[in-house]
Amino acid sequence: MKNDNRPINVNPTDLMAFAWPITALASIVHRIAGVVLFVGVGFGLYALDISLSSESGFEAIKGMIKSPFGMFVTWGLLAALAYHFVAGIKHLLMDWGVGETLEGSKFAAKVVLLFSAILISLAAIWVIQG
Image 1 (tube, rainbow, N blue to C red):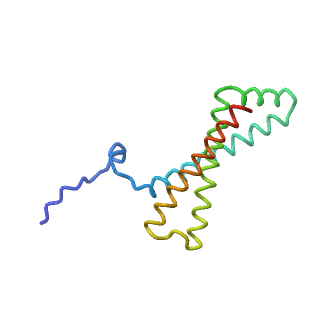
Image 2: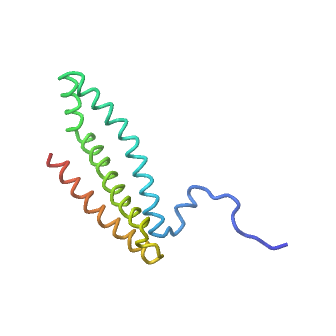
Image 3: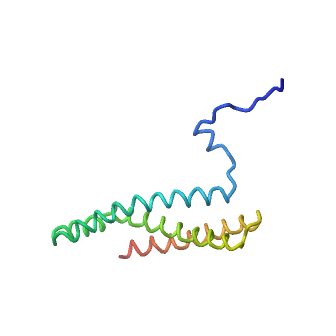
């Protein structure tokens, strides 16, 4: 019988020790951004309902959005939207056959991270100034 020293169970702390390739990180963050957007749509619809119910509801939502926590949540949703949008464009290009090689996918993941970082920074400036 072969001596196999591989671990049988992998703990979540073991996952942090792995050297994840940039393509995997880009894919995981894309999925996380999609979940954040899905949850954010629910909160956004609830805020829309409250703001349209009365003038006091509108002022309450406006006050929440202008608070530091509200600005952080707004920026977080815009950041998730920016990343998910840019990564979605990458996936569309890959569906057309662009960047299907290992080198191409690594380059595309770096481009996604760069462009989304630029958009996320612009979103932060927009939220702070608004």
